[in-house]
Image (cartoon, rainbow, N blue to C red; front, side):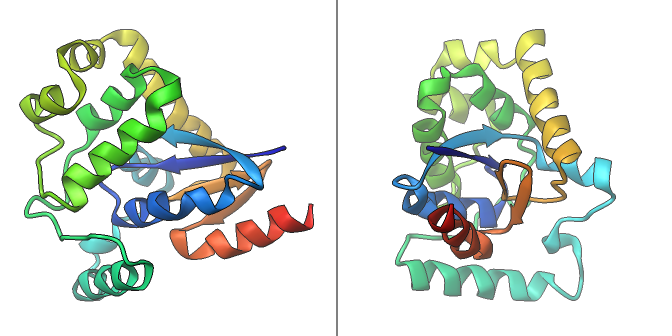
Length: 186
């Protein structure tokens, strides 16, 4: 079975949309959920978040509402957007790899559906447990997140979500159909 690396950040709305749809690939590929720090990607590539672009910011909310309606998924624009996700993403590197996908979905839903501040240590403790949040502050976890972010950039990522089928980048939730097509042809 082929491998797809799914790089994402909990604070990325399009990563949330993609996370709700990535299960479509499960019968075609082994999907590896790869949390990274979108701020680090933007810094390394000179890119900017769509919400920070004056011409695009007003469109963002409408686009996300349309996508949520299309996919029939719950969505609420968080009151704290954009969010500093450094501790959030470190926490995902502090959980057991076998539960990164389920844990990520819990964090996505807490932020994008329930409007919870998943950047707040107390909220993270309530969702993930004290041990995970404490482990998120260790040097090993910090290095792990940095390495994942650096790897994504090195492979060509410039935003989130970024999918890789071997060395081929598919950027954005709106390119899942192309990734699915490539997997079916292989």
